[in-house]
View: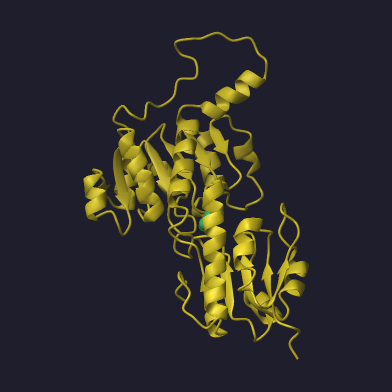
Length: 326
Ligand code: DGY
């Protein structure tokens, strides 16, 4: 016999957002209380038992074991993220469980962060801040902390021109960068209006001063940027990743940076997140962030709200707004 049905949220969400949905969440609402850390595997397997719906995060691995632990009454897994590589969508489809994500509400926030990371990396902002904090003696110098002038005709290569890539392209165009892009929208009218040139991955890698990754993580895109791609990048060029860590082979990246071939890298996401590659951590020309692409206050509330709307829709027998195709 299934236990009393409930909805389980793997993290506390903004109270005001949550309160809007409380009346509609007829099943009992259970929330993992820790704001900082997700439920452990054991806690997750136990908390989902008997649930009709789950609100999950990128930190929660939702696979066949979790779906089976939940039980046959489980109807929906509403991921509070645009990426859903943490969910075994095929296993969910086999069990008749709807999976949803939160596209379209975080594009501007992630693009803002991409530009912040770009400037921080190529203009050595984080490195400069660290230097000042050492308290070492310093004075302005003509060759001190010189970085790449992005507005002097430098080329940005956007790998995966979807919604977030396009929002990034709009910002880069405003900075005067020349833009190359791969992906479904590279041939669109909007891309053309921004001066985006469609390219293959090989062309983009060979011609860009900064390569920025915006592709989803799938079996095909794992290590999209490995030893060969890094070797084919321009000497002194930069790699940015605000998408998913495993798109990059981090050991190969560390080798390339060690050899002096690449000029630097900016990573908001990490191959073995939350673990950080120790070699990259030790490099001055690498900027490392704790996966904060979508961490704008209004953005996070929009994500929470969309995840809850999707959850409630499925529990009410309606179509969710943003289902993931199984
Ligand atoms: C996403 O939405 O996929 C982000 O990585 C989570 O912030």
